[in-house]
Length: 200
Length: 108
Image (cartoon, one colour):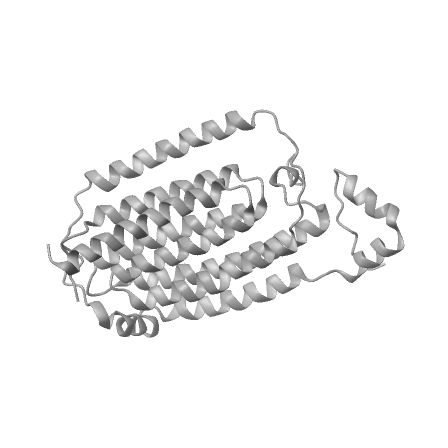
């Protein structure tokens, strides 16, 4: 075992332990801010796995998009809705968690069995390594041109949709300012509290 | 550059992806906080991406279609996160909570 292979093995073990531990932390830690930062760590480790797989472009895209955009967006959302509220106790929650854990463990066992017992046709053709970035560019502008353009339209639609959905409704602010009773009704109500926006 | 096809088997990457996917499924089902649900979805998408990248590197090494698919999945994930968090903010303004158990407007 040369020093390169042993370094690779150590890197893989460290990255995979961070991924598994961080993923468990994301779903189990009570404080959601810690969860968000752990999620950033998981994303960075996944980018490291991509580097081990000789895919530098996708690793850079992972860091830029996931850590730089999605994780920051999640942190902003946490800051915007950060209200410490006592969660209503729900009966049967423990049982539900237990059963869903059993289902997930079964799924995991199934996936493990498929992973281990299937004869994957390795080794495939020789990996192209560092010219993967050029090859991705060729793919994007030849045989994957239509999905590429559709992705741009999708991003535009997502941007407009996010702006429309997250825009603060001026009428509801006026209602809350004018009528504090109504606000209490909104808070305590269990029924549909969407404010009627039809033109009158 | 070292050749990654000899030391770490393809199975190792697939096992990591499976574990991450199952963690994501469990979190998706059991989270009470709506932001955590979105984070679990991101975990699942990352598990799928690891699968695609591993297959692309080990089996499809000279054409790398898997890497192109991963780029598209990352794009869709960004759009999904933006719209999901916008929906979350809108819900929070209407219900003043992020508890998933209280979002039962469409439940019979």
